[in-house]
Image 1: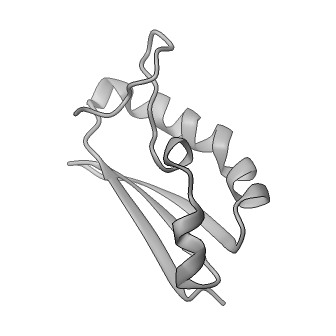
Image 2: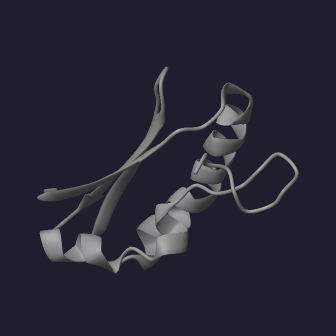
Length: 85
C-alpha cells in the first residue's frame, strides 16, 4: 500500500512532449528497481504541464530520490535540459 507520493511538475514545450514520455519510459523500471520503497511511477501529460507522480511505501522513502532521477531533463538534440527553467 502506498502511503506517500512525490509529485514533480514540469513546463515542457509541446514539441518536447514525446521526448518527455521517452525519458519517463526509459527511467521508470530503473527507478522502481533501485529506489528503496518506490512502488509506482506515473506520467501525466496535461495541457499546461507534465507531471510525474512517484508512489512510495513510506514518507521517508521519498527523500531517497536522486535529483537526476527526479527530473525529466533532455532536449531533442540529446542535451540534458528538457524542462523549461
